[in-house]
Length: 180
Image 1 (cartoon, helix red, strand yellow):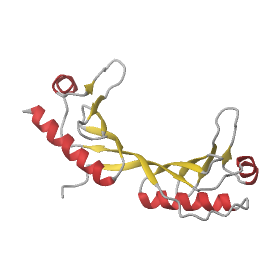
Image 2 (cartoon, helix red, strand yellow):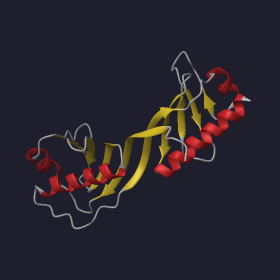
Image 3 (spheres, one colour):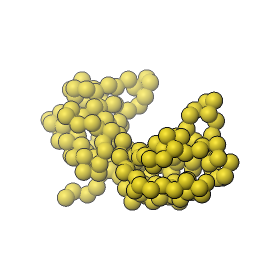
Image 4 (cartoon, helix red, strand yellow):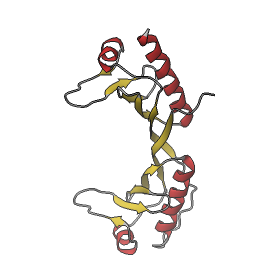
């Protein structure tokens, strides 16, 4: 296997605690929470270790963001359950975690002529007056890439590390085809 070209910088996932949650009580009991129901129906919980944030809804739905690995996602969900249990709610389920999106960044070992790529790649958008990167939706995948002329890349849209690495491999193959 070639050296890793990208590293995960954020995993967004969701789960359901299968229990109604009293958000006002949670906000009153715990530090590191924000709850403004007039502005947004969810409570924001910040977790110090691992450094993540969660949106918690009264229905028991949770969206967690900020983790850089699945192990950290699981740790965060455990912390959330522990925090919710502090207000007397017993979570009886082992929360099923569903990855919604992974964001990774890194570099591929090539300089990129974004003007040429914008013309030769399908599903590419490049407007340098508005943003210095080219946006490329990789065909046949959920992956969308930001490509920069220095070879730096950001990938979003995949839901597993395997799919992420496959997308990066396909990207490199597509870029090499276009460069010829």
